[in-house]
Length: 304
Image (tube, rainbow, N blue to C red; front, side, top):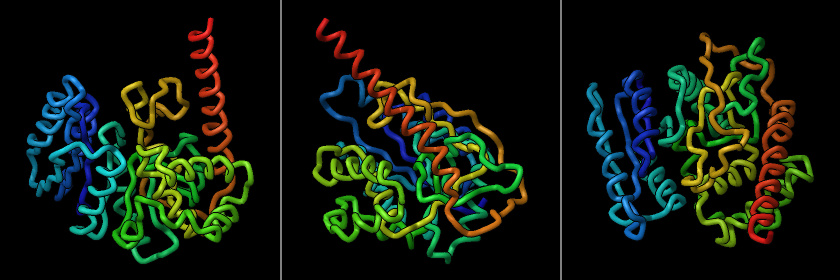
């Protein structure tokens, strides 16, 4: 393996340990670690952060380890975005994992081969490890293209990340909003995204670094690569999560599969609308119903 791996950690030594063990299997030559500082008002968090950071000190293969550890708590949005700015000030491409995103070992080769293949193709901005349908057209191809993807195990290039704006200033431009509406091509889906983007832009939602990244990609009609089988399982859905809190979320703990090699290209270079529609129906709509059920249950508990 030649590609640098970025590992974003915080206070979960249990999941960090599991992800670290898979990273250890593939022996990346460079490991760049981003960590936030504990919040003083949270009892026991300093000990959890220390235990999590100690795992990184167990690297036992030939590897350059670079650490970007915050001295004070920055919060998820600022810590991840500033950490990735640091990463891409040092390297031209990278494979990125958070401490709750468990990869299949084949994820690394999948990313590495496609980072090289599409290095200079300005249409492609991101390689994703998650397939929220678990499997899609795997009998025909190894991946498809989509405007929609999750940052639960992914890879990208400096050429793409250097355009990132954590404050999402471009969202105030009506022309940008109109362009994103056209790119999405579905009024219901656009309205759902717009509500999220408005909340990020106003500061109401201040935990998401990934929504500005998604918004930027949509504004540029940038494609993401989606694997034909799911290569990442998100273990982080629990009440302690910042953005992934519901245990019953349909995206939680999806089963892992292994990618077969050599990789097979899709028949054409275009977004796969079938995948996008299936993803939206199975997860966005289902989880919206889940949120409504939870909200009703809370209200019944409070007002009975």
